[in-house]
Image (cartoon, rainbow, N blue to C red; front, side):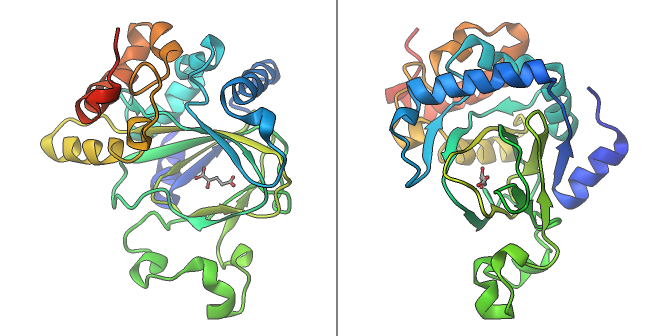
Length: 271
Ligand SMILES: O=C(O)CCC(=O)C(=O)O
């Protein structure tokens, strides 16, 4: 898959992009099965009772089939198209969500450094927990950032519910659709049920100069297993991701592995 210039322009200007049916029905069924196996066996899903979110790290790192999402031509074309073909894969989270998620950005990098790829595994509408975004809010000059508006207080501030914050877009999805957004973009979800299945891949630009390397160190010092005191048994990633990687996949793994092991030697890859 190759993004058109219009899709790249859309992503850069509005901070997100939706790709309907990036995955076929067969692929989506396999991914859903892989996600369910992973959350049930590695992610605490067996204990999910709907009272709160169940979350686990590295959702695509626990089975060879899920790891292969990182080899999928559609995913490589999508992520590569917005942050460069040699992007860094930096793990992600898998979830049974319960209820709503308030407005937040995932980062405040002030530049296009990190993106999130979101897989929603159930059909979702504006009333049942689809992702909502505030287009353009990734930009440092957006009014929400300039005026430091707390979007979650919009009822008190402006008399409109946060879910109705003016200009927000509800990205209704079917399984197989993929969303990608800049980490700096404000996003939320309203009205979800108690087992909303979703997982993410976080990716960053590959650092190629001292400034980017400093940003990569900062990013990986916050958003990784080591940073959360989690021992994957193989450092930055769970072992299956590395054990099943070919040379092409390693391009997306090598820089995060090196920086993570430098930052968290106590969890460094041991083989
Ligand atoms: O689907 C949701 O509830 C929101 C997801 C989200 O906020 C995130 O992945 O950062």
